[in-house]
Amino acid sequence: MTENEIAYGDAHGVGPKRLVVGAHYGMRDWLAQRVTAIVMATYTVILLALFLTGKDFSYEGWAGLFAMQWFKTATFVTFMALFYHVWVGVRDIWMDYVKSVALRLTLQIATILWLIGCAGWAAQILWRA
Image 1 (tube, one colour):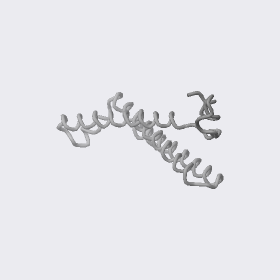
Image 2 (image 1 turned 90 degrees about the vertical axis):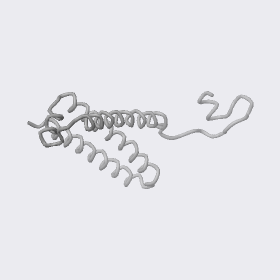
Image 3 (image 1 turned 45 degrees about the vertical axis):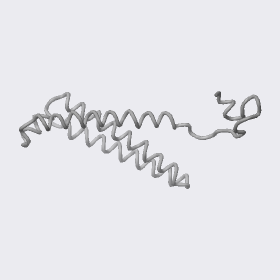
Image 4 (image 1 turned 180 degrees about the vertical axis):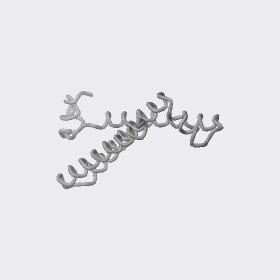
């Protein structure tokens, strides 16, 4: 079905007769939520495997695990996936339930700033000397 048919009905006069409007984020956001969920699930499985096979649950064991560059990178990628996952979900909540445009924009900006701050903090924790 083409966009024209969706907006104006098909050639036989059957179908919706309304113009479809909106941001049209649906498919992209649905896919982003699934991809970020897969990234987080994969990291969880790796972390669980490391816990189940490891025997050193001391500070030194944790420090050794996070000293490996691949693990720092995997952790940061997982955090970025988490933050994007959160952004899509919270943005949808603000768009669906906050009717005031000014309040919705304020909440969205506050959410973005908070998530950027969390990303910076995660990077600092993972890569500080």
